[in-house]
Length: 506
Image (cartoon, rainbow, N blue to C red; front, side, top):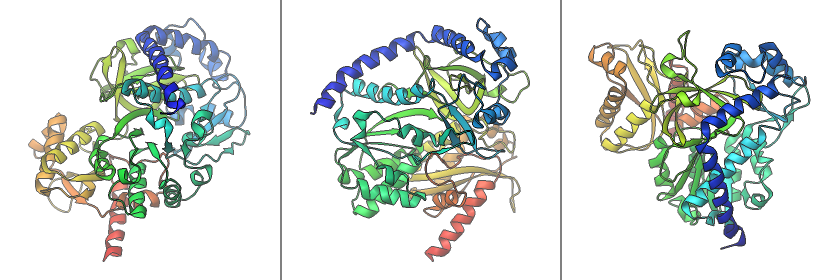
């Protein structure tokens, strides 16, 4: 055991105690934080436009500042992009995170000197919490790999550095981790994604890799390529000391069986909830899926009950008003200069002492062509039921409505790429359908009322999701295939990719 791992244990104990104390003081921390944000915000263009001032009550603040998504906040963001100071937050941002947008193309999310510690410190605290809980710091003696976006940065028209969040954060990795960190800057900058994965495999295949971090779908892609290149039967043959997988971005459960097969067994996992807009929560207990909310780290939270989200008079709740088990859309106000910003994610609370959440999906990502509003948590649970009942290992999946079938009633169509087929596809399909029925009463009524027929499976060739994402120019990095859709745009992409791969295999 090295000096570094020995020192990590007492540092982890101190950090865990500090963060636990913050978590116990959550409600008062949030109230205090709102006033701190208002103090800073009053000196900005946005603050003057909305009459922000310290001493405002929560209700006064809500009356002054409506909930906005990026498109609605964009006029102020654009002024900062062009180099104007004191627009959303005092001074200029240090960076803009460039992310995929919706109706207006790319989004530019500010990172300020005040908000950067949230991104860096939360990742550090998550690892220290793991060391404290597991009484295990062995991974710091080996290599760690972070599959991420390119660290190359450009500049906005106003001269502010700009890049992908993971690429920006790569420039702020603490010195004590740099010697252990992979891949190299050169490999990380490789384009396109397939070439980057190949470069990373070549650079890492002979290393003592102990920690791997990234979005599950892209780590899976890395593992599969690693095994192809090395000829190993599982990842543990290549990296015998690999023991910790750190992930975020999507739910891990649909990938768990495939990862177990690829790795050659189980490893410890730590889930994170980072986004360009902030680092919101991380898993602070082993074998507990709840993620402890960062309540005293520059972000003030509001919560809209998901069932009210599209209503005119929807409620905006503070932390002390939330209930366990209820789906909420997450709204943030932060020291990055984001005011009542709708990040698009849904969560539910699984604990109030401390406040822990699970991420349940995207508020606008659902299947509801018939009024059923099926969400990610429901389809992921149904898929888990199907794998338990009929076996099979799913690589990736997508659910879309088929409103006008060539014959019969409409249905939900599940596009699934398997690495291992179920023992009984009919039983698998029935279990999926029953799983959604059990979780969603509206879907149950549509099935029993003969408005919909049972869900149907579309088996895809291996690599179909990869090909579909590549065709969209969204391969690798922070990009994730959509799990649910209210139309068939991505379904058509998958069908085209599947047809192409079938022809190539014949």
